[in-house]
Image (tube, rainbow, N blue to C red; front, side, top):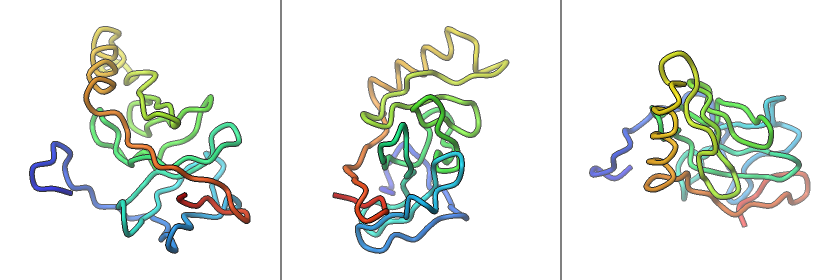
Length: 137
């Protein structure tokens, strides 16, 4: 991560190691549909399947930097494991702001969603399923 990055450095402890462009076998994905994958070129990504389509996106939630690869896929979106914000994995937009007693306060949740979509969408990476594995294309 660049020294001037607004996103803090995060330590990852349960990651799959990519083999070149091959990220992970579809059969190795957990029931919640997403894993963290360490790549040489892009660092750690959240990789999985949503509605039958593969995805790879930046791994940190824009709300409080939770590891999205430890979240789950719900209703075709990647859901943050901490406050259940949801992201569209096709374009990186936050489609639902943080939830819960404090963070689910509608004006706050909408403000986080708007700010994120204006300035800090998730980065998406082109992927495909090739021979049963999700690969960068």
